[in-house]
Length: 182
Image 1 (cartoon, helix red, strand yellow):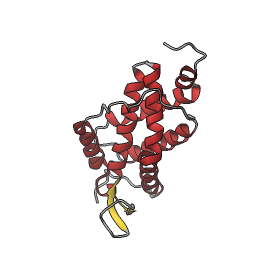
Image 2 (cartoon, one colour):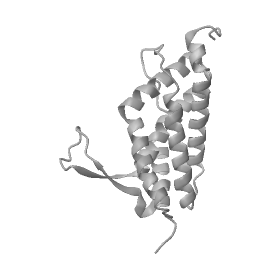
Image 3 (tube, one colour):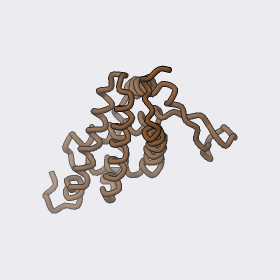
Image 4 (tube, rainbow, N blue to C red):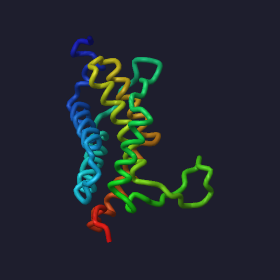
């Protein structure tokens, strides 16, 4: 255990990190408790969670890794898939979005079909992996999980969060109720 004066200890127990960890845990709990009948409340709550997470993450600051290798992921493909399916069922036809193709994609068209559920589940996976490692209380691993999360934020999950938030924002302001069948 590090003494309270070490940089790793100060970082992993800073109020900004602790607040972000609490929000990440709440987001994960929210998604894990979905029943499939949330409708408009699901959209509203997800907008609140995602916007809060983004804002809080920006406050967490930076750290340097202690170890040479990244922490092992903990969310399984089956867990990710189950969450993806639950969100897909809740959003129904409102799950599909179009986005601009990224440089490394094989699809050469300007727009590609995508889903909100994929982005939301990917953000969940990143935050759940981070939260599990963080909850173990081993400061060096907590630090490295935070460092890895920041790296992956820049690489992909930050943009996935914003893309899902943007699509959900459009549904929210249009007062869409995905449970209402016409």
